[in-house]
Length: 603
Image 1 (cartoon, rainbow, N blue to C red):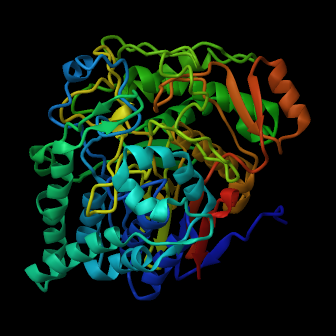
Image 2 (cartoon, rainbow, N blue to C red):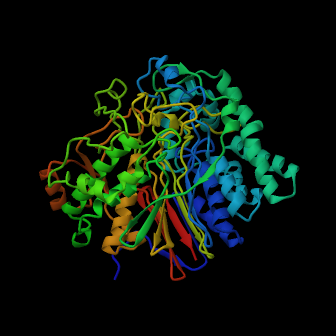
Image 3 (cartoon, helix red, strand yellow):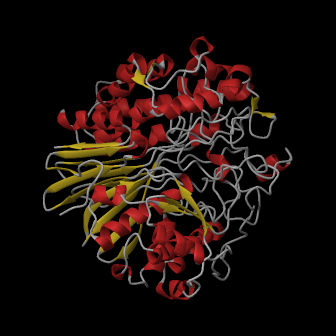
């Protein structure tokens, strides 16, 4: 008999969709009902997420996607745009910066999401551009109900919008009032932008494929790119430095890049093969944690026990230290993943895990590889002294009433979706960037640009040092797992540096303790901010361990005794997982109940 869950694990045979917003899930399911496949549904779901979760992602953001066709190999679609050609280390040093700003235009990279979605639609989808974009256009034009954190986010940057980012005020502060949770909100500029792309693409050809190709060109060379470049050329924008800066993007940045396919990086674990992105994302850190944990008998533990939490947390500290020492764009950095995932390397690293919590940041050593790990202790850097909210916003709490921020220092978050259709096609995608609070809205387009360049270091000895055309080492990390060689599960979560913690805990609970998808998502969550954050102000909190208060008190007390700097978070506050599986002809899906936003559907 299964334990109580907050909602049922969805089961069916026709198709399942799960995402971080119920309206996006409904759109994806609508596409499946109309005869579309998982790829068509994922595009529709992804574009609706841009509309209904503008504080979590937008058209100017990025998206990594993992696809598992029912009759082909697993592929990664790289939808992470690179740094501009003008983004040299010297350019930032000349501005007297020690880290890249967390808001504004100076941290903008090439928007990657649109082209990635179009590439997948072109090669794997079956439906027309208008079919898949109609849901997003309708929600943007006719309105959707605001979730509380959109209202909270707008309230926090209200003064900045009114005094500096006035194009954002035109969209989000109608009549100079902060919209309230539950209000019907519309973004007609965004609707017009997508409507115009569809109309211009349809004027090129009657062919579905040619229309999609035309849409990609309109985005990178047509009116969309031109509006972005016109704004970048003239706008000097206030950011987290307290100063105004212009963007570094120019026309050549848009025309030189397009989304691409890659082979996934994989690791075999207890009969499962987990597929992740390459080290331009943090995805391999999930695999490194598995490589460490493979040497422990997790089956003998209880998933709420101090031993389980301790072993997973200590493994995370080691794996994420390696992320900082070795990960970067593989086109620029030789990342020794073969060594980092090897049995010999992990046998040695595992010896560092004792029954006491480590307070050190301890990357491994691979001769001739890697670089400097930049350590900025929480609250000690100039940028962080007034910033007590570390990391990418794992989660803006559902009932938070944040204080105003006059520099755009409000952190964004991320979305996620997983879809499996009746033919067995699977998609896992993690859209993010271009948050409403990240930079000013581009006039006439209704969206703003991503700040993903804040993940670069301004340290030439770091593998993640900024360079022209280089991909930022993103936190975005969808997951796909094969079971006994057959595509089995698509899963993932928002949460920045926590993505490959929350998704790992979910996976371990499903694999080792037999929890179903919903039980694994509902289980008490935990995380650590021990290692350097990927987000402004790039600080770390050595020894930190945050747990939901639903853990047994004996577990919490024992973790404190072992030396963890325990923070007990509110119940149901950590994690935003989604997952879907296919096995023996049966489809299953589940979604996170926290923040009362995510939803799974299927039949």
